[in-house]
Length: 546
Image: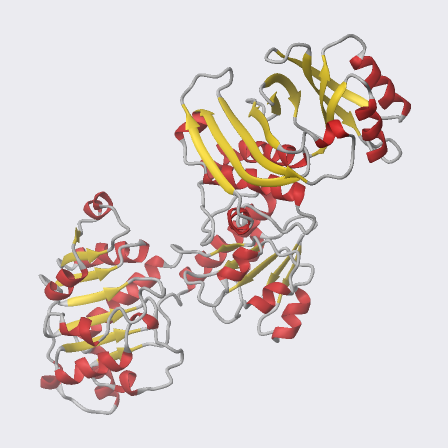
């Protein structure tokens, strides 16, 4: 495993990545060409804000599985390009929230009490006491635009100053707002009521210049603006104009668009307190962000756990431990139906039974698709991150459903592959006739973590899901097991287990699942599979490698 760290991380973070057989390539400020060369065999890339992770850089890293941004925003990462490649993009959204919140409060206090200007006056040997009269923030109304982790930290500190706190955030529930003592309001209402407005939004097309000339005109006259989130949220020219007109009394800005500013007019205004994007620049925040990022990368590479992903659903460690065997089960079931013939796939049906029916299973549905595509696409590159997008591009519908119907297992996953227009040109006619139509398998995970295939095309069987399987349909008559076993024995292929199930809807039909041990010189080759299919009692047969 190779991890490339392109920007600085504290030593405490590097400690999380010191694993046996892992290589850490940590170097700051390397040229883009050198970084691209270093990424050719890398599994993970960790950056801060200095390194730009472009589409071209991503294309230079064929093995890359995860990109981690040690910070909140991922503006410097081409998330769309990473997602298309199936690469997880992670960040550390809450690790620096206290530092950013404290800086936001510092800017607010600096606007209420002109400490920076008074300090500059004193350093110029001037005593201008009457010039720097301020105002209390007690009893004033603070409007938070965005009530995520940073916004909630700011709210707590504002309450300590006895401020009234309101917020606009359409993605936060009333319960969360109530828990932190914040009233949820519309953005127009917030602007009309707030004495101070602090921005805590991500940079998105929908939030760019959300505070423009029109918005400032709707604000309470004399409002003060604080921005420690993203410079793109504010139209700088509009803010400067609103300050000049007296509509906005002042602004505390830590972020700009671009950075550093191309036009320094706003930063030089006497009503503005400006800092060079340092809200998260504390020793504590840098260590916590680095440690959280490194730990998330470690857990992903070592266990497959996805946390703090911006392009894939994240789960808690508890949920992941519970779902982990079912994620592998889902991938195996998808792989099985994907390997049972060659035909045009138009839909994949996934149904969850038992305890799984009560959960949100986007991870499991993606794992099924990953298994299907890994079986049928020679190019590879499909992961749960891009599996749904790959399905959409190929016109394949994913149909997920849940059932409360009682089954014989605590939890069970059912996968049906709907196909048409067989295109296979190999194998017997009996094998080719099996390509089109519906392929149906079900499986479960036992408490000890072992996986079981429990149904094939409506026929109950119970076989271990591991290694190489032969799935057969045969006439239910004496001698079939012996014929298959003798054939495999002649080719030095050892049988680990042989499970049979009778198809009661088809008189005289049965399904067999044979687990075999493969090794060099004792493989179920295409020629061996053809011999199995030639056995008179065999209706169809498929070799499945998991």
